[in-house]
Image (tube, rainbow, N blue to C red; front, top):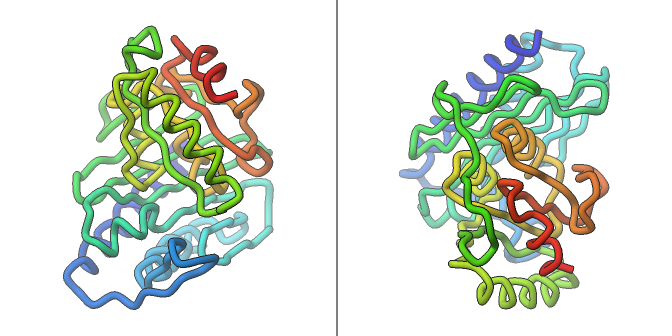
Length: 256
C-alpha cells in the first residue's frame, strides 16, 4: 500500500513540477498572504489543484492538508502538500524551488517525496525502507563536529521570531564552515538527507514545509528534533533542528 502511495506521490510531484517549469516563462499573478514576504502565485494554486485531483482520483477517501487554504478530513491517511515551496525564488526565477508531499498514516509520516524540478531531482522515502534520489540510495554526511559543518537555514515570516533567528544565524556563522540560505525548506532538508548539508534549523515552519523532508532525513540516517531536543511534531513544534546525527547535541546547545 505505501509503495503504491509513494508511486502516486512521485508522479503527482513531478507533474506539478513540470507545470511550474512551464510557468517560468509566463506572466505570473502575484499576491501576498500574511505579509509582503509571504507570496503566492496562480501557479501555487494550479500545482496544488493538479496534485489534489490526482490523489482524489486514486484515493477519494483520504484526507488532505495543503498550503493554499485546503484542509479535508476524511480518514486517518492524510496527504500533506506544499505545491510550490520557495515561491519567492520562483517569482524571481531563482532555480531552487520544489514540490513537497508527505503522507501521514495513523498520526505518523510514512511516505515523503520532494521534487526539485529544474534539477530533475526526486527525493523519496518510505518509513523503514531508506531514502533515495532518483531511485538511488542516499545517506547523510559523515561530518562529526559543528566547526567542520556546512549548515542551512531560513528566516521566519513571523516578525516576532526574527530577532532570535538573526541572533542564532550570527552565532552559528562563526562556529561552522558556513551557512546557506536558499529560501526553500524542502530543498534544504533534501540536501541534508543526501549529504550536501550537514545540519539545518529553522523557526516558524508549517507542516507542509517539513512533513516529507523530516522523513527523508531520518530514512537517510539523520536525526530530527525540536529546539529542545525532543520529538519534532510537525503541527506543534515551533522549530525544527536536523543533522546527520553526529553533532546534534552540539548544535542544539548553540541554538539554546
